[in-house]
Length: 432
Ligand SMILES: [Zn+2]
Image (cartoon, rainbow, N blue to C red; front, top):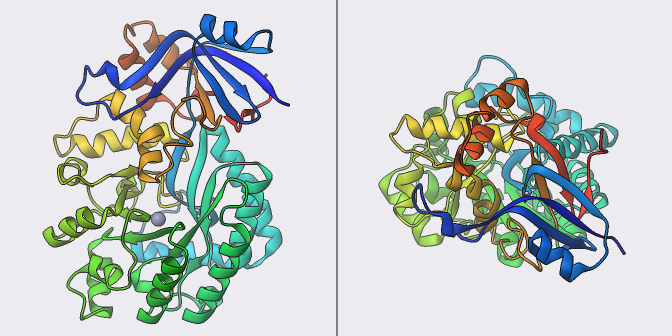
């Protein structure tokens, strides 16, 4: 039995903060304790109270660092670890010139397995304990991803990309093989350990109507799987989609008419939306996923967080590696802050840290299991050091409040600010 107490400054949100001063939205203990047993959180509170209840246990003292729930990244491309930082294109050319050739390499099981190890090492080094990932079209890329996540006992979701047109021959499946391969992966992996399957038609351009129908059938047969795809990222992409689907009322309608929308639908980008699409997103409870570093890198556009939220839509926030440029959810908040600033939308650090923890868990329907430090939830945590670099240390001298410290972390922090990451109660980094 594995049991221990983590001591540190504990921060966990129990609802989304409203406005700058909303300190009732979270629990914060300056000298806190999180009691872990067999991968679960069994107690959380002041260190004195927790240690009194727990009795004599090993204590790992992380003071003066902050202990938060592990970060959640709900849109990331596993086969694009080596695509990050590829120069000079916008979406469609970038896919053709960089992404598709790289994803081709995942036909090789050895390459897929090596990249899976590197991928999860990178995630945990950046404090991310849950992600929803696109794999390549080859089923063995999803096999490598899911097997490695399972071996590491991580709460992960992923799926083989379905694409049966407008991609190179070596990457293309068919409506039938995409369905069969996805179904076999669902039967093998979905619900096993901490894994979820995500049915993954890449986007409208790379799927025929019959493949989207097959994806819709899969989702109807497995309604507790996620469905992930891309929506309205780029103007050329939208024009091409409407050319390929002349009967669709708009881009979203392409997915809607194939039964792909709902609370399990994670729609990457959602930048250039029509009014009807916004109303339909709200009606179906579908989840837009804001990917700021990617939207800036590919020059795609500005996500209207406040506009969608005002309609009752639940927005997630994610890295979108490799269109995105950082595995760090802190750097994702940094760039997201700037994208929203350009639209006169200010993201308070309380809301920002809620977003990458409990907020993304709510978007995934997993807030009863991850995203907080509540008793009875899974012990995935990140330990943050706001003095991790010389610059942060100097800036920290003038910090007076928790909100200021969080803002410093999200603007200046990255993997260097991650002192430790716990997955199911186990530390991922060997102490220096
Ligand atoms: Zn993407």
